[in-house]
Image 1 (cartoon, helix red, strand yellow):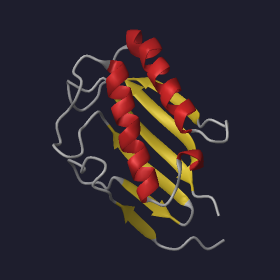
Image 2 (tube, one colour; image 1 turned 90 degrees about the vertical axis):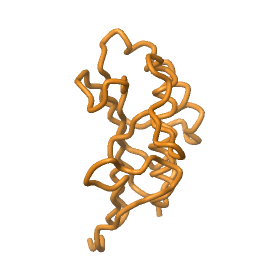
Image 3 (tube, helix red, strand yellow; image 1 turned 180 degrees about the vertical axis):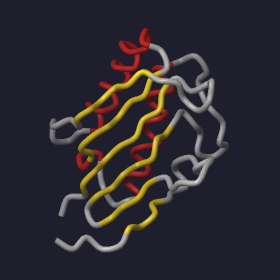
Amino acid sequence: MTVGPKVAVSTPDAPAPAHTFHQGVRRGPFVQVSGQGPVDPATSEYLFPGDVAAQTTRTLRNVLAIVEAAGATFDDIMMLRVYLTRREDFPIMNEAYGAFVEEHSTTGVLPSRTTVFTGLPREEMLVEIDAFAIVAD
Protein backbone atom coordinates (compact mmCIF):
# COMPACT_ATOMS: atom_id res chain seq x y z
CA MET A 1 0.00 0.00 0.00
CA THR A 2 1.35 3.42 -0.98
CA VAL A 3 0.27 6.19 1.36
CA GLY A 4 2.11 9.22 -0.04
CA PRO A 5 3.99 11.96 1.79
CA LYS A 6 3.37 13.23 5.30
CA VAL A 7 1.42 16.52 5.15
CA ALA A 8 0.92 19.14 7.86
CA VAL A 9 -2.68 19.93 8.76
CA SER A 10 -3.50 23.50 9.71
CA THR A 11 -6.67 25.49 10.30
CA PRO A 12 -7.51 28.89 11.79
CA ASP A 13 -10.50 27.17 13.46
CA ALA A 14 -8.21 25.61 16.07
CA PRO A 15 -5.44 27.18 18.15
CA ALA A 16 -2.05 27.64 16.56
CA PRO A 17 0.55 25.35 18.14
CA ALA A 18 2.65 27.05 20.79
CA HIS A 19 5.63 24.76 20.22
CA THR A 20 7.44 22.89 17.47
CA PHE A 21 4.66 20.69 16.12
CA HIS A 22 1.71 20.97 13.75
CA GLN A 23 -1.97 20.94 14.70
CA GLY A 24 -2.15 17.64 12.91
CA VAL A 25 -0.39 15.43 10.38
CA ARG A 26 -1.93 13.39 7.58
CA ARG A 27 -0.32 10.62 5.59
CA GLY A 28 -2.57 8.87 3.14
CA PRO A 29 -5.82 8.10 4.96
CA PHE A 30 -4.23 8.45 8.42
CA VAL A 31 -4.69 11.61 10.49
CA GLN A 32 -3.06 12.29 13.85
CA VAL A 33 -4.24 15.37 15.76
CA SER A 34 -1.81 16.88 18.26
CA GLY A 35 -3.00 17.33 21.82
CA GLN A 36 -5.46 20.19 22.10
CA GLY A 37 -6.60 22.19 25.10
CA PRO A 38 -9.38 24.62 25.98
CA VAL A 39 -7.98 27.46 23.90
CA ASP A 40 -9.91 30.04 21.87
CA PRO A 41 -8.53 29.82 18.30
CA ALA A 42 -9.11 33.55 17.69
CA THR A 43 -7.42 34.90 20.81
CA SER A 44 -5.14 32.04 21.97
CA GLU A 45 -6.63 32.53 25.45
CA TYR A 46 -7.16 29.57 27.76
CA LEU A 47 -10.89 29.43 28.52
CA PHE A 48 -13.12 28.31 31.38
CA PRO A 49 -10.69 28.18 34.32
CA GLY A 50 -11.79 25.54 36.80
CA ASP A 51 -14.67 24.25 34.59
CA VAL A 52 -13.66 20.83 33.25
CA ALA A 53 -16.98 20.33 31.41
CA ALA A 54 -16.63 23.55 29.41
CA GLN A 55 -12.92 22.87 28.86
CA THR A 56 -13.72 19.39 27.53
CA THR A 57 -16.27 20.71 25.04
CA ARG A 58 -13.97 23.52 23.81
CA THR A 59 -11.08 21.07 23.49
CA LEU A 60 -13.19 18.62 21.47
CA ARG A 61 -14.27 21.48 19.17
CA ASN A 62 -10.59 22.21 18.52
CA VAL A 63 -9.87 18.54 17.81
CA LEU A 64 -12.82 18.32 15.42
CA ALA A 65 -11.74 21.46 13.53
CA ILE A 66 -8.34 19.86 12.84
CA VAL A 67 -9.90 16.53 11.85
CA GLU A 68 -12.14 18.37 9.39
CA ALA A 69 -9.22 20.43 8.05
CA ALA A 70 -7.54 17.09 7.22
CA GLY A 71 -10.55 16.10 5.10
CA ALA A 72 -12.05 13.76 7.68
CA THR A 73 -15.28 13.80 9.70
CA PHE A 74 -16.06 13.00 13.31
CA ASP A 75 -17.11 9.52 12.20
CA ASP A 76 -13.59 8.96 10.83
CA ILE A 77 -12.09 9.31 14.32
CA MET A 78 -10.92 5.92 15.54
CA MET A 79 -9.42 6.94 18.89
CA LEU A 80 -9.52 9.87 21.30
CA ARG A 81 -7.06 10.14 24.17
CA VAL A 82 -8.10 12.28 27.12
CA TYR A 83 -5.57 13.58 29.63
CA LEU A 84 -6.97 14.90 32.93
CA THR A 85 -5.16 16.57 35.79
CA ARG A 86 -7.60 15.55 38.53
CA ARG A 87 -9.19 12.15 39.08
CA GLU A 88 -12.26 13.78 40.65
CA ASP A 89 -12.97 15.54 37.32
CA PHE A 90 -13.51 12.24 35.49
CA PRO A 91 -17.33 12.03 35.87
CA ILE A 92 -17.80 15.67 34.85
CA MET A 93 -15.47 15.31 31.86
CA ASN A 94 -17.14 12.03 30.92
CA GLU A 95 -20.59 13.64 30.84
CA ALA A 96 -19.44 16.56 28.64
CA TYR A 97 -17.44 14.18 26.44
CA GLY A 98 -20.42 11.85 26.04
CA ALA A 99 -22.74 14.69 25.03
CA PHE A 100 -20.24 15.91 22.42
CA VAL A 101 -19.48 12.54 20.83
CA GLU A 102 -23.13 11.51 20.72
CA GLU A 103 -24.05 14.82 19.07
CA HIS A 104 -21.33 14.48 16.43
CA SER A 105 -21.54 10.75 15.69
CA THR A 106 -23.85 10.04 12.77
CA THR A 107 -23.25 6.28 12.67
CA GLY A 108 -23.67 5.48 16.34
CA VAL A 109 -20.21 3.88 16.37
CA LEU A 110 -18.26 5.98 18.86
CA PRO A 111 -14.46 6.31 18.84
CA SER A 112 -12.35 4.25 21.18
CA ARG A 113 -10.99 6.22 24.12
CA THR A 114 -8.25 6.14 26.71
CA THR A 115 -8.24 8.46 29.73
CA VAL A 116 -5.00 9.19 31.58
CA PHE A 117 -4.45 11.24 34.74
CA THR A 118 -1.32 13.37 34.48
CA GLY A 119 0.21 16.82 34.75
CA LEU A 120 -0.39 19.13 31.78
CA PRO A 121 1.78 21.92 30.30
CA ARG A 122 -0.33 24.81 31.61
CA GLU A 123 -1.74 25.13 35.12
CA GLU A 124 -5.12 26.34 33.82
CA MET A 125 -5.52 23.23 31.63
CA LEU A 126 -7.67 20.60 33.28
CA VAL A 127 -7.94 18.53 30.09
CA GLU A 128 -6.02 17.82 26.88
CA ILE A 129 -7.28 15.60 24.05
CA ASP A 130 -5.66 14.17 20.93
CA ALA A 131 -7.15 12.05 18.15
CA PHE A 132 -6.37 9.49 15.48
CA ALA A 133 -8.60 9.27 12.40
CA ILE A 134 -8.66 7.29 9.19
CA VAL A 135 -10.24 9.17 6.31
CA ALA A 136 -12.99 7.18 4.65
CA ASP A 137 -12.80 6.61 0.90
